[in-house]
Image 1 (spheres, one colour):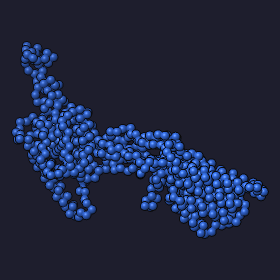
Image 2 (image 1 turned 90 degrees about the vertical axis):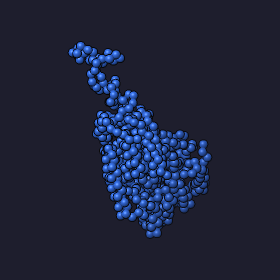
Image 3 (image 1 turned 90 degrees about the horizontal axis):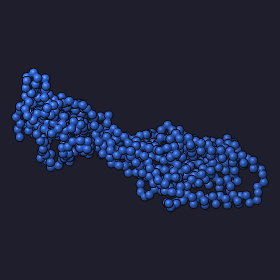
Image 4 (image 1 turned 180 degrees about the vertical axis):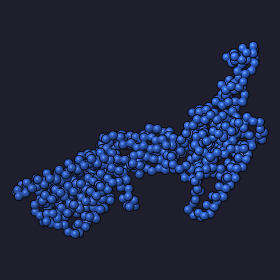
Amino acid sequence: MIGQAIRSWSRGQWALRLVVLAGPVLATWAAGLTGDPPGRLALGVVVVASLGFAVFPESAVGTIAFATVLLTWGLGSSPSTPPEAVLAAGALVASHVAALVVSYGPDDVPLDRRLTLTWLVRGSALFVVAPVVWLLATGLEGQPEPAGLWVAAVAALAVAGVVATTSLGPRRAT
Amino acid sequence: MTGIPQWRPTAATSRAAVVATAGTLAAVLAGRPTLLVLVAPLVVATALALAGRPRRTPSVRSDFDHHALHEGQGTTSRLVLTDAEDVEQVTRVASREPFVSVRPHGGRVTGLLAAGAVDLEFGPRRWGRRVVGEEVVALTSPWAGFRWGPSTIIGDQVRVLPVGLHYASHAESPQPRGLVGAHRSSRPGSGTEFAGIRAFVPGDRLRRINWRVSARTDRLHVTTTRAEEDSGVLLVVDAIADHGRSGGVGGAESSLDLTVRAAAAVAEHATRQGDRVSLRVLGRSTLQVGYGSGRRHLRRVLGTLASIQPGAAHDGELERLQLRATEGTMVVVLSPMLAEVVATLTATAVRRGLPTLVVDTMPADAEPGLPPEADPLLADLAWRMRRLEREQVLASLATLGCPVVPWRGPGTIDEVTHRLARRARQPHLGSR
């Protein structure tokens, strides 16, 4: 069944699925560039999950692959914000957007050129956020933390979480 | 699919939301801004997807440009969306139906609504009842935040008429018996075909006077012409079985394909000539269309041809069947001549003195449809014997004076009709 689905992929689908596969793997590999190479287990999990993500872009394995990448970076010993993080962010965005475009329809639906270009632009715009945050983080490194910063951050996250949950929940049709 | 489709978050939104939340939380709790850099684009993506949350529930249906089709023709299915202000993208996936081609990309399209209509073109490739326009539609909100559907649109059952091949024929009808028409009659009348010159009698039209002959003979003479009459054509279609493989218009033709298309071509030609056409289908259900002429009647005939389904009738229904063809009707039997009952009907018509011809619609490469458990050697032997019997039947019909012509497209029956017309002018005995 999977073989049949794979055979029905167009060239565009193949290209995008390769991006889906390569994104998390590249992001994990970028962690190694900081001098903190990822563990074999983590790398293995990312590769397997990314493979699953490439074949089933709408499944939860994509989340597992991304979460493992975050774990790899989170467990790193580097106290600063390395520039390789921007590369990893770019790889994750590319993988996310490619999976999104691929999952617009069944496996044998050919890609729409205009839709793909739209998402190329959107993906690039999303990626721009990463270097901006990196610049901010690098700029603020070594600065004394204002009192209550982390409490405010946690509170803001909680509010954002509540808003997101409300938004994602079912809504009555109008 | 069950239930009414609703807007639901896409997998991409869920993924981005979970990863962004987990990453941001971990960044804050562990004091690792690096994680914030990693998930920042996904935070923005989630925010944009949520901001575009749809407020209205859309509804979809499809409209066709045409509802009556001939095989080989196509129609465009246009998606009609209502309350679709929140829709950014549309995906349409047409179901694969036998003998229905869908364009583009085999009926699998996706596109931005702002870029224009996402249309599908359906083209039935074979006559008959076809389901056209069955598809699944999914809509997506801006930034692929939410998806509506997939929702199934039930297709329309369309009666696909057999392709009508036009052909010009100058063959006369063997026994025209009507009021007005295009065929030369054996009796004099007000047609255009020259019949002779005779002496003027009271009642003759003055414009018929032949002045040259009148001047030469000192007596009034008139030019006489033959009447022009219409004729009746009875099409007998053998739908007892379908032999061979059908590949739709332009592809391989099965016996029933040949039969139906030939019947459509003859019916169209006869109707154009102003003849009365009747149709009798021999098969699972003995469909019948009475005599009539004109475009509307032709449409009825083609519609009946399109609703043919191969199969044998029950309980000797066909054996009891009578053609009920009146004198002057030309009987055209379109059949692969593998059923005995069709041969018997044809022979009966010939013996009654009706001008009858058989159009042989057996494809040259026809092979029997075998159930999987059938012994291929035995089946091959049976098939060969069946074909030998068929040859015998055709030879017997020819001996009776019934011409048999294989269908080779429009004009096939021209020469045979000429011969039948010549023979009809000769004195003969008919039995009833």
